Length: 159
Picture 1: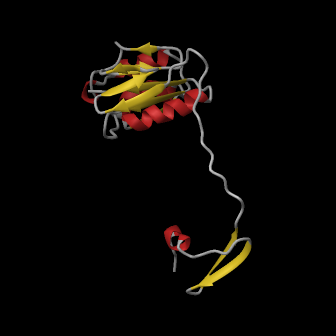
Picture 2: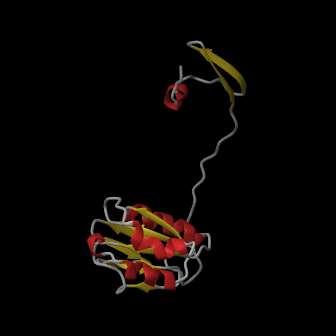
């Protein structure tokens, strides 16, 4: 019988090393000193990061945008992306190809949606990663990748 991790978490474990048997299940463990760590996301001066997002907007470097945009660590492009998901065309992805990113994050709004593969084919043919996710996840993922120094482009659909 397989037990879920949540069931195992309820078993009280003594400090140190050893094993505990409960309901004919033996759990081996080693408890180490665990400290809480707070991570602070930083970037190089002048690089773009998402500093906020919400329903109908994103914030890049403390500047609020209420329309679709493309964000790279070096630039914010406001006029080259479809206003909403249904208006996406292959030319939007061809423009992203010109930016020469390693990976493109497509923030599809409040819900995850997948465009037809024909639209993203130019990127995948060029061996550029393409990830679709909701806008909030795209903003968070972009920040991590940009902080790592990756060549990332976030195409964020607001409408």
